Image (cartoon, rainbow, N blue to C red; front, side, top):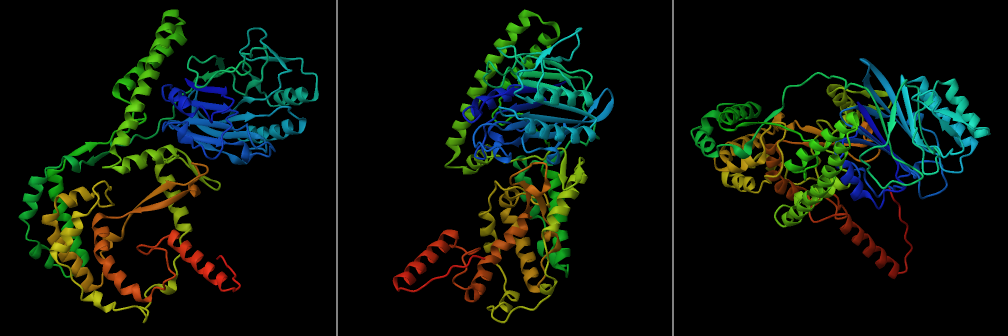
Length: 588
């Protein structure tokens, strides 16, 4: 059973905390809201947890001249394959999302639209929206349109116990336009719950044969008399995808480092590494020895990903499961005792949610002096950072729904924005750079490498070689010698190991449509040994280049930044103006 929660919330800007609490303790498949009144300063993560892919259209993206009010939003469970179709959207406040779901054992393309037509509705506005609906009907198997149409003059009545409603008293231009369009496209209106004036401002239109519309037991926001909340439900089955094996990873935090160090101490690194003439062969031998030791003393752990926020305790998760069982039991049997029990459990869930969230924030605040990374992770999450990708992604007119296809889309996008100047490949070193030849004779001592290893950040993750900094740091006294041998050979031969040029590319969401790969930027995760080599070389290379970098260069230099660049610019500008000279500023 797929449940769609709909409500005209009449503003969410002052209700973000309460809305997130009620949503986190509910279990709706899809959430559709109108009149959100949101602006760009409020992120999706302030309203929805990680269970949902959020599609949103604020009033600023429509042609409405009013700056406040309006806005629609649609949250779709990540268990459902979904993507936004902006080509179907009109100039009014409508949002189209397409789902791939299994209805009666047939995989169908279901398009859902949430719309808000601000009053007074004009015939041009209505017909423009209906034109976009017509495009969607031609390209979809089934369509559900729900929202605030503000056409309260139309009376809707249930005749002959039909599940859909029949229109009455629509004798004007707006009424004829809507009803005629519904008749020509086999659309029916399923909302039978009127407002306090027994009017129907919020409509549910669909070409499906049956949709059950009822009052939800779990409201997510304050209910207003003119706009009751609605719960749409119909039978469907999740599409079964190929199951992957349970993901496991090495748990370096529970490794037996005493045995690891003892095992690596028995290795004669000089004989093992210096026997190879090529630095790439040396690195391969180094990894072979390390991986053999790791396989013996580092345990595997199964990766489990919870669909709940990190601050949810096990007690709260169990209580939510009990609440959901009670809710389903009440919907089936309509037992008053189940209803009473449900409301009691719901209150307990909200109380426990507040306690868990308060405790979580206190722990974050207490950890700031010792581990500020937790604080900034919390801020990033609140500002809309995404740690997972939607199940369906697109680029231009291409859509991908499987992991390999999505990875190929990212690969194509990231490679398309990168250009390589072939004229620079293999070019000679400029004459004005300092003593670069000295790098060929440069060598490092074992204690220098050990000191650099000691400064590694153990909170960082592993690179493509799956060896994290915590392993290197805990074993620095036995790893500093082989790394010294490899680094010195690399400098002597002028060859950087090929395996350390590889990276794990992670797409990081920027802004805009979360399903569009163009709204992501690539971040390369390098091997810990590669970054360590860079940190050892950086002071030497920086010293060689200091003489040939102009003083006006502020980017990518230690102790320089945008702030120092602006301060220098303002200082020089003021000095020239004091001398009575004319200035011209050119921005490139």
